[in-house]
Image (spheres, rainbow, N blue to C red):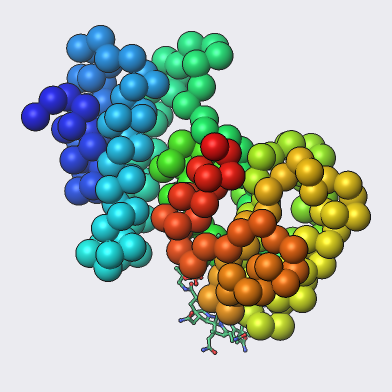
Length: 210
Ligand code: B12
């Protein structure tokens, strides 16, 4: 097994303690930091995402895998030379106003980070105007909105409308998700896409960037 394959396996197995050593070994062997991230760490999360979708892995294991990936990232991130970024793109994400659920959102964040995206998490119970301020400040490629309550779905619609009203619709792609949200609802409110889970969200985000 190559050094990068060992890193990938450690992420999948959630070996938080070993991953830093294995990543360091890859660095010492002269592997490029960006290659370690993409072909070692992110490759592991890719497999985790696929297995999660196939019900072969479950939420706690995905969370541990994501934590493992982060531990490996900590080793290589400082070594990235300027301009050599691991980032695929930037996603700004939050749970809409009135809604405090964030477990699903956090899982989506981990899958996005696993796919190489930089993620700005604006938290829970986020009013439309705060999303707008954050978009202006961070200039993300993608806006992610989460809602878990049928009663907060209108707040999701308001957030999408606010993006349009602020004239920012050409600058960000909007993806939405959460248990009561559907593809049809996404289309109805003018979002660019919907994903039912974290790994599909990461795939959708990659499509937006391509
Ligand atoms: C945990 C939970 C809570 C916790 C939240 C803790 C937290 N930090 O998130 C607490 C206890 C705080 C809570 C409170 C309430 N809850 Co609650 N809660 C749940 C529960 C049990 C699990 C939700 C969850 O985490 N699922 C696991 C994650 C992984 O799944 P997920 O959230 O769906 O996310 C996935 C996808 O939807 C998608 N996704 C999610 N977000 C996004 C975003 C984007 C951009 C994309 C692309 C994809 C995406 O990807 C995720 C990963 O795969 C659900 C029931 C259920 N089984 O869903 C009820 C549930 C959502 N709650 C419910 C209710 C009613 C409430 C309360 C009103 C209860 C009360 N009377 O106080 C309050 C409301 C508080 C508020 N204002 O938000 C109802 C909603 C009913 C409805 N249809 O509106 C549910 C369905 C329970 C029920 N059957 O009645 N809740």
